Image (cartoon, rainbow, N blue to C red; front, side, top):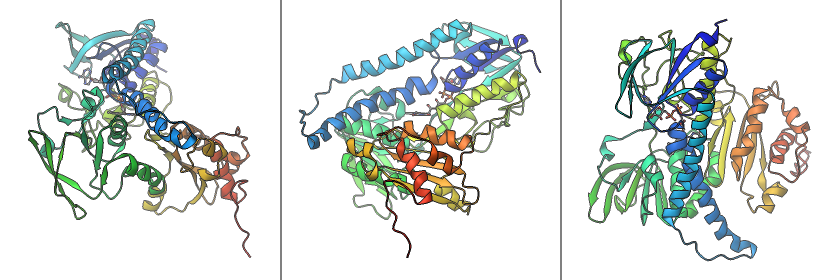
Length: 474
Ligand SMILES: Cc1cc2nc3c(=O)[nH]c(=O)nc-3n(C[C@H](O)[C@H](O)[C@H](O)COP(=O)(O)OP(=O)(O)OC[C@H]3O[C@@H](n4cnc5c(N)ncnc54)[C@H](O)[C@@H]3O)c2cc1C
């Protein structure tokens, strides 16, 4: 095994993968240099991704619930929104968390360089600090954690503040009267939800036949129904042909067989059509690192690139581009560098869409099983039969288990409903532990909670769920 304490490693990029890697490396006794343009670690996730979007979604949920409260005998006046204060609260959340990471970095004696790195060779970096100074630094190993950025469609590129990507949308400079979200993926739907709650008339356009392509349709359906109420329109099977700025907004042309209005005018347009890996790192051609067809850096299961001195982790190495996948890869890479026998081969990486209702899934999906022609059994528990869901007035949810019919092992879990993002962790644990459906059914869950829906979906598998009546076959 390598003596980790002799190693000096550099981590380029301080997002969730980079700072997780840097911190573990320091915990294992390595000398660590972490390089990123921001003042503190955090990357996209903390500065312009997961965290600011969730802070704003929390506010959106509050606004939405205050409107629903009418049904329970409580009526609130329409909210008055102080945008400057909302912005400063969101920025405060980001500052608190990134500042905390700065402290954790100092406590671990990680050398944090605010700047950018370029390669001189496989072991040497040219580091340009934001204060204007530059240095050539040599390391035993280098970890690339440079993340990703919003993808751009050339025909939708207009240099005007009326056109936004996820980063500028999170800046919340104003609430437009009307907003078109291009792309029905999770980022577009989450940000659309925020703007709709703040008062914008939001439309979503998606070129495929459904929102959230890739997620099982039965999970998406309750969300789609709710979104039809909060959004002005959802245009499916529709593409944006072009955009043109006019005095009063952006004129958008739509193409597709279901298009009713070929042209519409919006105050603002948010383009959210996926993300691209930041693999164009200056000087990378001086190393042996190889880049795959979609721009992702190629790595093995130890996250080592084709250059033995260089590892790569997070969004820059591939899907799913999610923070929790990124940080686990970061930890695996560092353990591999330390000489531990490790591989990144998870059975389940959870995906969560933080809309209302939330959608979460992990492991095998029904869509994937169908594609692979794989035999599965599916057990679904409707939240209309959950005491907790009824007390919350959220009966539209559903929990399902995807099970191997031969071994009765849980292969996948899907949940739609309030708080699905918290509930899915139990599914991940079940899959990683190789749980049988019986294990889940026999695990006593607290009452009344939404977590019981996981246990009862396992009971549904055996046809013995307490709260679901299944008539006996004659
Ligand atoms: C709006 C939005 C919402 C999201 N919500 C979620 C969510 O709820 N849950 C979830 O799991 N994921 C979410 N994501 C995705 C998540 O942010 C990413 O998966 C995650 O940040 C990837 O981490 P990373 O470490 O790979 O890179 P990043 O977080 O992208 O960080 C990379 C860092 O490297 C720096 N860098 C790049 N090149 C260089 C260089 N040459 N030198 C020095 N530094 C460099 C960049 O400036 C950046 O700071 C969201 C993303 C967006 C945009």
